[in-house]
Length: 442
Ligand SMILES: [Ca+2]
Image 1: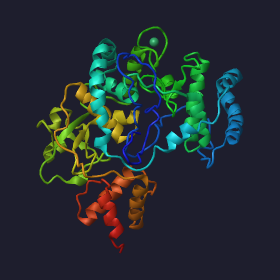
Image 2 (image 1 turned 90 degrees about the vertical axis):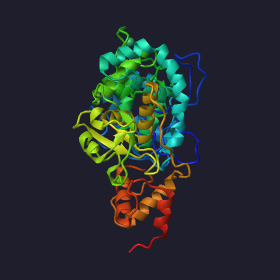
Image 3 (image 1 turned 180 degrees about the vertical axis):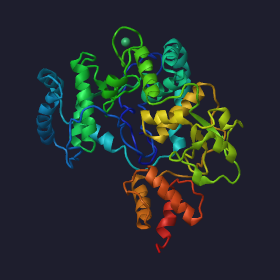
Image 4 (image 1 turned 30 degrees about the vertical axis):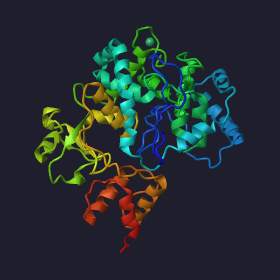
């Protein structure tokens, strides 16, 4: 997460790897590690599938210790062997492994509160010039992946840039250790056990060496930061050498990235995000990623792309579309098309998806946002978000006071704003928190 003075929410496993190493864009200076996005939904991409290794589910360990970790591994080993991992694979993969508190710390620090989107989007300005160079240098491989998957080359390039700064920051965690530590810590034990099984399977099948299992603190690997299970399910061989090498082969990484988006429902030829021009008197309560209407319905309401285009001229009349307000009603309004949601499938953070979508637009030649951000508006810490949620809970709204900003909180804020006669943009602010603090609950 990069340093703005707030607690940021959210981090997805498919993203954000501290550490760095030389990448394919060798002439570029090593960048800072990509920050986790602010915002607040889930911490980790959750599409596991496969057999349930752990029917007992998640069990958080309050105080992780090396001894507890060793005991857990002793209990996990027979289950992994029953799932098809050979004793020799397990023993060699686990040699030298110890509890990685850094993985656990980065993982748990990545939740709660809400950062300022425009601060987060400063990364796009950094990634844009580097991206133009990387795009030009890898045009043939990106175009090939685009042809074979129907996913635009700039979209793949943008994910590559956002995930690893175009291959410059692949992460330096031994992912077997990271995944085992996160599984032991327990909040998402079932998920991380499945990913550990996938990592060991990659090793056992000779798809990677132990050294190549180096990646993010949350276990993501390679140029476009795939979780191990996604390498098995959706990894593709783009250069025809018979191997799926998402770390060493850009052809493989690009094709796999496009394949992932296509698999999740990418609509070839359609846009993903556009700046919106909202009509006077727009009903703010219609905005939010949780609300979808057809392009034709938005047209009828007078919502346009900022350049004046009708939405039905950009996608089919029946295509589901959202208007989103990533900084509330005082910030830049955006039109989120179905393809925008494919970026959320990659990493379920609105801020991440907006950054990827915006960088892809910029790489395709679009200008920066024409409308401005509310610079005087702060973000919210996890504690402030929790307090705001508690106030809403006390008023009977349906949500959980967990410090995370997700759809339930968005809906509760929106409903409260409507009842209070405020612009119902569903966006929590310090001003709203102050109002709730000072308002008598009837
Ligand atoms: Ca290959």
